[in-house]
Length: 385
Image (cartoon, rainbow, N blue to C red; front, side, top):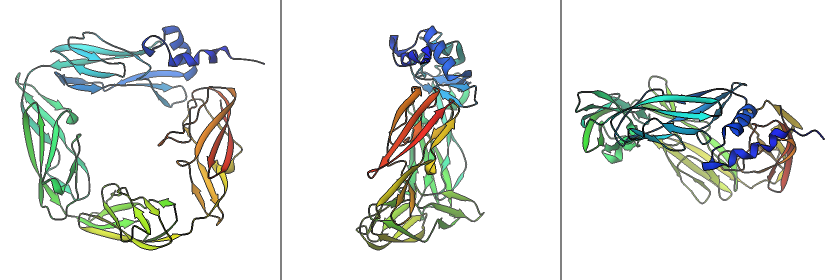
């Protein structure tokens, strides 16, 4: 049997001094991944003392795809008295001056200059539009004047934000504002950093004319779920998805219930109305809950026997349940996933929420991937070349 000795080295990616590889093992791993080049972002970094900035170290592979290296890189800084960096690339400003931060993996490295100015913040300014449409999120920025006379941008997430009146909508720690109230003509944005505050009045434009739904009537099985799309339609014809910011209600939650994201779940057989509203505009869906059907079969990638991909390519497998009624439904997120490696590898498949069915294609080889749902099982052969 022919055996590729390089696969013995791949588990060393997970061990070593301070969880880092020595240069020899890194070089082997880099060759296995097929790294063509690396990048370190952001390119320009200006910080105040105690500010932090997350760096991102990314490899571009020879097949054109990208691969994150933050947790595998060796991070260093030129002067820890000015800025430090942790093992994940988070930079913290500690003193006044200029230094550099670098990231290295095998023979690949990148470096960025860090400028830290310890001058005191004198004034704070909120930048962004003077008006905002109801139910259409908008982002606002910060800048400041400092005691040395300089003026520069400030990371939005380093300040505390507020929205008045608070009942008008929401504002997150990145300065992203969503107004959902139908009754306000304006809102006041606030931001505070280092005891320095700024405010900005913003007019609220009520140009929302309707909420468009994928359908006005839906059916769902008992125990099943469905998430319709809700889009705000404006006077200028533009649209924006409001499924996650609108208010969803069910007239009969004992028949079908709905969560804040608009996911409707069948509870008992019957009919109910689901209403979605935002900015004083609402639409309704008639939901019919029918008896649940049995899963009679399961397929992966529409029943394909095998699938071939290039090493490093993105591969997320889809599992489809076939019900006794003939209905087909994707159950990728609900299935249990496992893998049996036939040759090469290692090859794994994710069974984690939010990434189920994702195959790790960094290593060449062959494997059978299995999906199980409601006592039904399906297989597909994955060949990574």
